[in-house]
Each structure stands twice: as C-alpha cells, then as structure tokens.
Length: 128
Image (cartoon, rainbow, N blue to C red; front, top):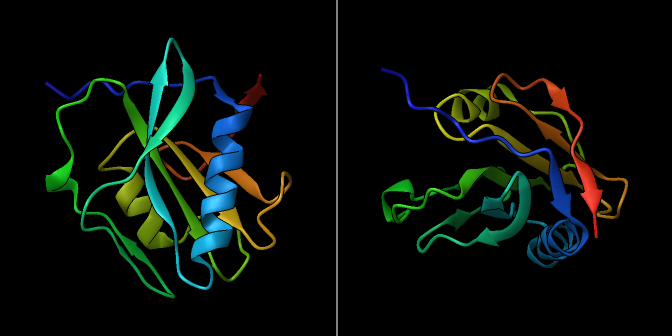
C-alpha cells in the first residue's frame, strides 16, 4: 500500500522569509531543508544533520530524518537563479514528500515557487 503523502495549502510568511534568507546566506551553494506543516500550513523548516551543500546540489541525508508525521516536503535553492525543477529534482520529489519549494537569485519575495511531486507548479498561499 503506497504511503499517503501529506499536503499543505499555505506557508507562513515568516517561514518563506526564513527559507529565502537561508538561501541568500548559503549562496553560491545550494540550501536545503525539510518542510513541516500543521493543519495544512507550512510552519517551519528542519535542517538535517549531514546535509551537503555544493554549488550544483544539496544532498539530504534522509536517514537522519526522525520519524515526524508533520513533514510535507522540501525546500532548496538554485544558485543559478532558475526556479524550475531539474530532472534530478523531479526524481527526488517523487520519492519524498508532496510539496517542494525552489528559490532562486535574488532570493526575494518573488523568486520562489512551489511544486508537487511531479514537478508541476502549485499555488501555495502565503499567510500571516
């Protein structure tokens, strides 16, 4: 029986701002984090120990992920500025979570997008 994936419909403003700020701080390397949600709203990020950030990828050590039923997906940056998922991104999306956020240069309020597990853009409302 396939694992039921948790979904989210919105993200807290402070959470997306934190993702964008972390993306800026790690640039020119990729930033990567796990998304946690409560009642359909992404409320925080989780940094996994051992995550490797390079100029072309962020490698998650998923074996370090605790059992956590609030996890809904991932966030990562693209130092190139592109906010479209790569083939490698989509392959990863299909293995883990339902919502995936990609940020790009200049890492401002307009330089991010959310995707489903197939790499299709989805609307993720920003809430206070």
